[in-house]
Image (cartoon, rainbow, N blue to C red):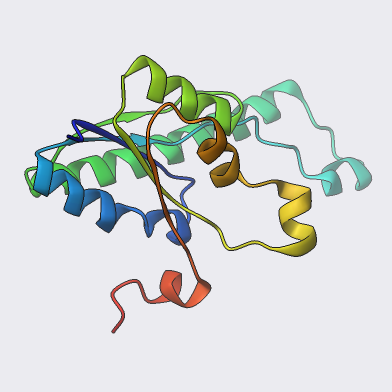
Length: 160
């Protein structure tokens, strides 16, 4: 029923709260989990400009390369952990707009389910940052399982 499951991650503990749900479904249906971490351009801290720092293209590229290296390392770690549990998995690191990238992979990989956590934002911060989960839910070509994230869960995911 659920041959392929996407789990979008941003590197935060809150986003990882979706993983146990995806793992349980993958075990039940012998599914493959597709881990997705979208690489976005890394903004140069405003302070560097205001402090008169010389922000070169090389510096910007180095910051971006380090962010990409960190993201790959993060995904490889999760990939290996899932493989040790005999869960089939692959990972993707597209560049671009988060929502579009998730939906593009869901479409191109003929994904059967998207499992993702919300980040629990409300009020002004949700309006400013938008909600990736909301946008994915509205446009996804498949069912979406949203795991409601709460800060206390992220600090203590096992509940102990």
